[in-house]
Picture (tube, rainbow, N blue to C red):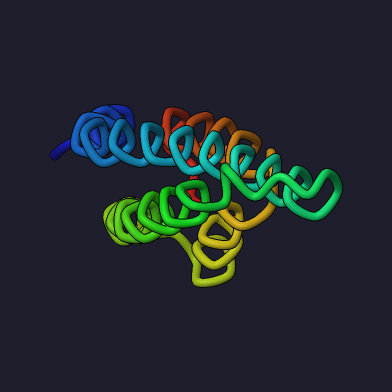
Length: 114
């Protein structure tokens, strides 16, 4: 019979790869969103649309991969639907992907569900 402590350790070990991929994409998505926010401010506030040509596409691409990585982690960590949706939406609000990444990392490392 396997003890609860051993089960948690095995669970954390099995989530190491998905968590690392999620964390990398959360940061990339957050940085891309900050670039997009800056581009929008420059375009509409200062009539300088230069960054808009790449910032939106970059964030969109990172966000699509972020969604896949977050769902992968959610399924493997057995998150609730509500928790999963909140994490998925975190990539659409500036700075929130960084906050969500820290919260997710702490919960997964402690073996708690979202």
